[in-house]
Amino acid sequence: MLLNCGQPLPLLRHTDVPPRVIENFILTGYRFPNYSLRDCLLSAFRPTNETGNFWTHFLPVFVFSYYFVEVFGWEGAPHGDDPFFYPLWNYFIGVFCLLMASSMAHLLNSMSLVVREVCFFVDYGTISAYTVGSSLAYYYYIHPRAGIVDTGGHNSSDSKHEPFYAIPEFSVFFETFYIPSACVVAIICVLSCCNTRQRWRRHRYVIRTLVFLLPFLISSTPVFYRLLTRSPYSTTSSAFAASTSMPCFFYRHCLWLLVSAVFNISKFPERLAPGRFDIWGHSHQWFHCCTFLSILDELHMIKVEVRAILLSPNLLLPPATLAPIPGPTVTSTYGVMFLLQTTIISIIVWFSWQANCIYGPQRDQLAKEHLKKHFKCH
Ligand SMILES: [Zn+2]
Image 1: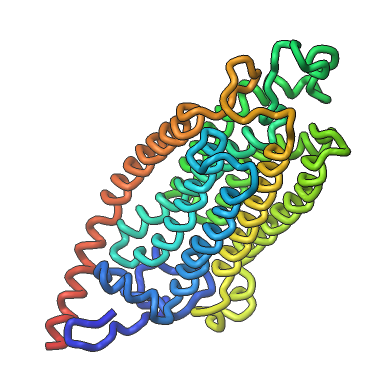
Image 2 (image 1 turned 90 degrees about the vertical axis):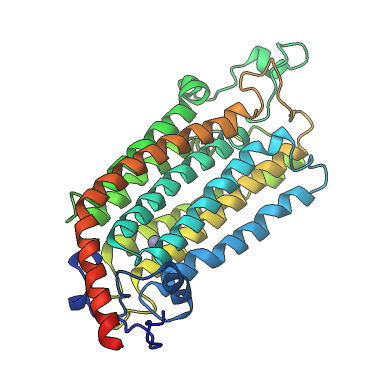
């Protein structure tokens, strides 16, 4: 943040930064696009047009963690490293990476044009990984057969005499294609969003928003199914009572997502008064707040379903060999996440290399300008 001669680097107007860096309707508060790592980190405590973007995803890491750990203190909950919690930990990894990558992307993106591109590629990658983390949690806790062990008809009249699925056509999708679909869609999302930084620039906000609608629709299918059919729990059970608030949390999750999409596409309120919301209150900060609130409601929704499973005496938690959907294993949770992350990292490396070819020469030009200013100062 400090210029080499002891003066803080002045913030720039939109006319003084490369076109690449300009945000619609944001006129001032830009950082010099060649900051050192130290300058970037210190800029978190200085009002720039990225400060609010950083804090609105950095502070939520702690709020999310606070609500997350509550599960492990519940009565009857297995130990935190029990396989039952593998999907929940994957969900945590997804959300943690998303919030950290997003806040760091906003903080560090003024190191250079190439770093800026890489930061946002990583941001898109972590959003996609988060959707798969959610899908794993939905699969093991909200899925029509979550936690239900098929005993081969020895002691379960339900599984023997009546079809489990109220809508049998969904059984193949849920049991075979749900997680693979979530992974494929996540990869399509990363590819599309990274592409919007190099082409399709004009409609980039619309494309990015719509592209993330698809993983939402795929990963939420167990919830849609639950809302369309009946609860798997007996209406007199405590598990049933525990899961009654699930739809409410889901609807709120959807509402926050919708509002965040409106902010992201409309660029409201800065569109109405360009320049007035440059530092605080512009649409991206509201977008961050709404996405976090949607995540928080999603966490509450997953938690009530976890609680319902823990309260249900008919459901077994550890992996069961006879179960149509075996319990979570390291391979089916961390393994899936690892494979997905590796693919996403490969995509990011590819796009970063391309960005380096495009913006590398501009970076050298900016470095020269920076050097000139430094000598003038002395
Ligand atoms: Zn952001």
